[in-house]
Length: 419
Image (cartoon, rainbow, N blue to C red):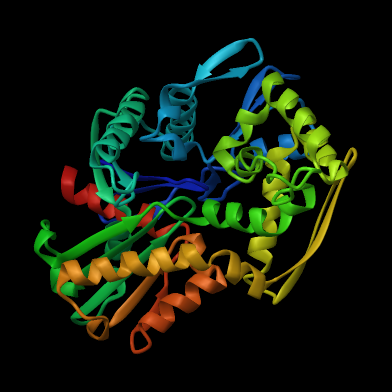
């Protein structure tokens, strides 16, 4: 029996695991309800004293079950949060342990699908886990490798996610192409300039074909945060002043509430006391009162989910109606695609600058790019897609499997490395 080699794309928002080996092409394994993607989410149910993963985790939380939801757990890599603890019922769990539990579940489900143990794995990694800090970036990979190794994988290698996407796309290439891979996911935006061809695809070592890579720690969860701060947090007092007009209200609680992996930091008595004090000083205490009620009821992740839904809706329509209601909280606002574009203006400029650095490092002008290879769910955001196409008007834009191409490419890479 031919040995199976696997690639794992552990993403900020969604994860996949693909297998390849023998004469079989790479394939994504079903991870939840027959689907190849699983949201990178964990829910610790206090009522049932058990742990849920993926869509089921989000569903349990949304239906109001008592417990703790953790999303965007990949975002703690390379940060001080990695070794911090968070309270889950009576237990203090390290974020590193929570991350490990999710990876262990990916392994368990994949092995159940294959019918045998997985020993070899190529893990995807962004070009930059952490911007402008090489030491923290290297530490992030070490942390991820440790978490993967702790789950029983014996042979672990890493590959840049945009290179993996290029390897997947290259299977359909008929001639020589110079491609730019734009991999914009939930937490990072990564770019690779690479030479592609059927002949090159057969080579085991592709280092000479990779002209440049660069990345920036900006992705879909940042887009959620920016949209939330622009359109939703002001409904609860963000950007307003104290009653005497001498200073703005503290922005930190709003920033945390708008940021997926920081929401749980609000759920403590100290923060609530500070919010009540802010409410007493606020020019619009009724708005801050909604913020307090939302934090007291631990509705932060549900609110963030609604913001994400609004962002996604604006990929298909020019306007959407944002609406969120719960106890003592009623938030409503129309949001247009133009407002989303404005909220993301600085982020898209940073992404464009990273693309410029990639081209410069590769010694390639944008006019020489034949193919723009788009992968990652955030390439579907209008402001991002429009910016990419404007930068490369003459290039052929190819939309790969937004959520699966990286995993498939990692499995191809695993065959090369471990066969």
